[in-house]
Picture (tube, one colour):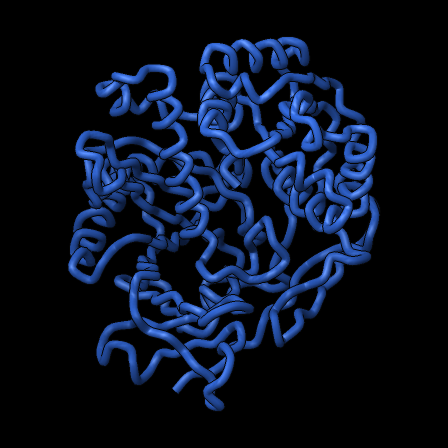
Length: 445
């Protein structure tokens, strides 16, 4: 009933800062690729960055900069990311997280000390703290400052430090604008000379006990072709617990108009992945949101071909191998038997399940103007997620939309930290809008 798709090849470089692109075959058992003696495709030059150490008064959890900073720089260089010494290093304590005013003054001080030109601020925390929400909100919406947070206990630990630093390096590179992994070939059916944009959309709702907070919509879109690994995002509030995305057409058009800034042309084809939609809401997505998007495009005399796909994780289907033991291998796809008799849908288990039973993603195609089949699109996309060297369980446009929607939760909590009775302000779109200097970056990864 099911079959296993062949994994694509990935583009990487030999270890170091200078090397030619090579095509790396992927292990068929776990579908992972090893970064030992390998470098990413395009590493940024991190010239101006700083460290904000919140662990200086935390005893045994205190950050060890003399050891860790050289190790981070060395690990970045081994991955092809040239990183200079930090130009700013500031010691403080976790007490700053308790008050919004103190955090704001601290970030302003670091920003001014660097003359507003930091590419990245690495924030070392002694423990997880709700004040993290305010740090992210203020730096991303008010200062236009990209941050990378980490725990001192994790980054100090010699055991597994190399892997941890590699993970940080991948995130830093993606946030600043580098390219970590690319597919060696174009995606079948829709690949070619014409540009393709992938859009992911999701709505984040407040908890069941919350009766007043807004739902927040999130839309992400690819900003490069054919690498399809750089995204820009938009988030905005809407009515409480409303799934239908308001302003969907306007926000998608905003991302479409940002695309030529990097590519000089608009995309000719668009593939939309919609998350969080049940079967009873398919009509809303197809005849509501999609029609709104087409109307916005039509008013600008823009007529791309469009495919709309719904990604669903909330289902009870599970896939098992013929021998009945273990998980199905990555790339297992089922599009017969348990799927709809007439509709275009499939179940795809794109990731390696190491623990427990793998849960496949159900993809339902509501509109297809590109005439592709189930064999290639979602599986290949799952290999382009920027922060890990393996395929993920969900197509990255949807995965990133989830991350951006979660970021909106942090922003809302940050607002309440600053203004506990800020009911009206919570519905103000300006509260969620990123600073212009980073709005088209992958700040959310």
